Image (cartoon, rainbow, N blue to C red; front, side):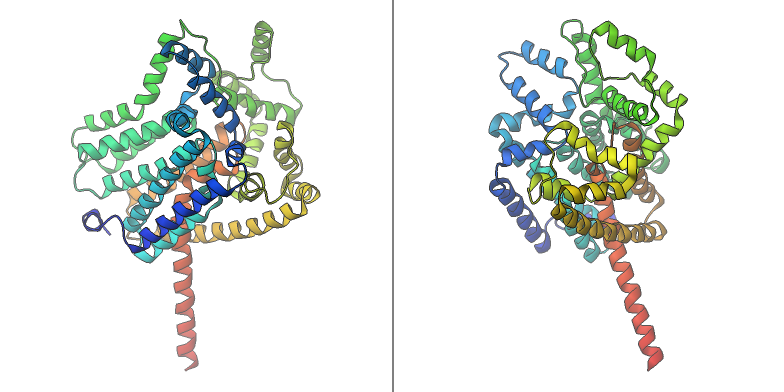
Length: 462
């Protein structure tokens, strides 16, 4: 279906109205009925750090003191966009904001899918995305995915609109640039996404882009929020103490290098150790140049951590977080930060079987639920792979859209596995809307092949 046809259709139909009502009612019920939901909101990665940052920021009496807090904590994109909701309603204000953002994600994903696949496939896609663990969990956790994941769906929709349009209109380019700019501001893994999107525009919209200045404007918008932040840091660092965020790039590079050092029985770079001595404390932050040098000396160890992370990124179903930590259906015996790391350490030491054995020893109920979740997730991935093949081979999918979807999926998997201190299952959640579309295509295409096979067998028997 082309843009002219889809633009004539209403945004909402009876199916979407029912789905949206079910989605909102379910998430409101979870927010209100899960015991101690305000505390459970902090089970997300670094959620406690974000809450402490928000609480400290909101008690400041003036802008000067507020800026001092932001500079000292660092990486404001990771937490500051939750400030208005937290100020208005605390934990439940944040949940309300996230639920509404995800509801927008449901609507836009349905619209996006209808532009790419038949109606019945689009319906399967949006329902499957709504049922995934990340979609259920993230609206109730203080995590950056609650902002980024709906934005990624909106970004993909905007880019597909640009591909289908006869000519690029300024408002479309403006909103796409602002969306990708917010993504780059919130999470450092998306810092290169504005550049990748601009290259996509140059490659596939040369005739419809108009003046090349349009791409320059897109890039300016894509880096606007980050550029303003860097400018404020450059000016304000003379007045305010500049801290290192626990979720910033340098902290993640340190975590990755530290894992490599433990795995290989090595010391961290001497320059980092010297800086620790000079500071009188462990800085736990590695400069990109230091990290690059360390990786160049130990590429095998880096590859081993990246492979381990890529496996966990795609294979972990997310049941432990959703059913265990959030819903409390079983106990993972996590009483300290060290306990949270035991799963990754076991995976890197003994592989998935070691993790399964540790889970069985920790919680047999958790083992059974995770096994069931793993089987369902493996089936979901299998259908998604089949659907990806159908999507890639379809004559109805333009090369631009093919590269957009496969490229965005590869971007998230590769960049996350290479730059994050360690990957979590929900790092992949940003591209799960793509997997959901592919899953729906896989289900329908395999069902149609099965029906065709049965029909041929029936005719042969007759």
